[in-house]
Length: 64
Image (cartoon, rainbow, N blue to C red; front, side):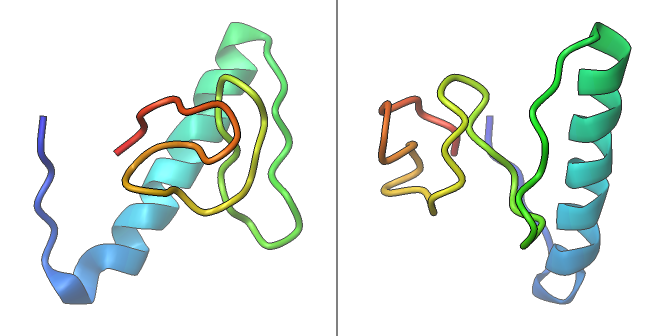
């Protein structure tokens, strides 16, 4: 799947994704707190590092 977002709407869409992620975690009874900078954590290992070629740099899960 590929998602295309107009450049001027990236931040708004990122916030929508963050809220959806938190709501999903709460609904499922899971917990993966956001770091203070607000970045999402890898659902597999909890890393908040920037993706490398669309994947988590710690565990390799493809997220992009």
